[in-house]
Length: 305
Ligand code: XMP
Image (tube, rainbow, N blue to C red; front, top):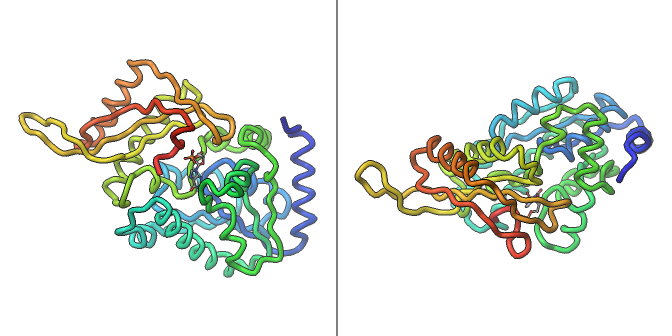
């Protein structure tokens, strides 16, 4: 386990040495990794760092407001509303890796514009150890590894948490007094809710997934999962009044893990599962059924795409 008391000042010194008097930019994702990297870098170089948060429209409920509040102290913070641009680019795209590619590309475009206008020489990234391993193994394209460094001709890449595991990053977050919600926040994939709706991304499916993810995170907090999520996985028949209707199927998943590379589905009590079901179907009349996923990783992945 990392010794935070020595890690934090050393990381800040190192970032300061690397960036010097130049400007730097970081993409804030809302997750703990980039939040910690940004907080360390801001300690090191202050407003020479421009943190950029791109609201893709694929974020969790309330996430953008929370970012605004948490990082309000960083005077150089930029929040970009790019929802319409992302959704229009995603229209008609159904393949999971194609969705990732579209999101990655659009993200780069948004970020490039901001990095240029911030006149940034350095790129700070919240890459952690398991990201590097999975990317090297070609398991999934993580858009926080690769991509961004090629955008602008940066003088250097700074990755202050590159050797840490997620639980170590959280410890650093607590040490830095980052908002409890950010420090304890579950990992959330770069492509956001787009990989929690199977097939084409539509606003309707996103709304179902966003509310369902919120319910699941809220109800399962006491189980302390590595990740708890909900995904819109298809359509099935339900009944409303006297009529048969074709509505959304929402799958609920809650897993334990240390690093996301393997995971175990959690055993959840029936009452909690029923409460989740009732809140999700109650929030959206077009949800026909809610199922619970009991599959470990492997053979399943944690996300649905
Ligand atoms: P899987 O679904 O591969 O997820 O078992 C392992 C961990 O990685 C996250 N994940 C992603 N993170 N870009 C990301 O930044 C992605 O494309 C992506 N896909 C999955 C997932 O949420 C889990 O924590």
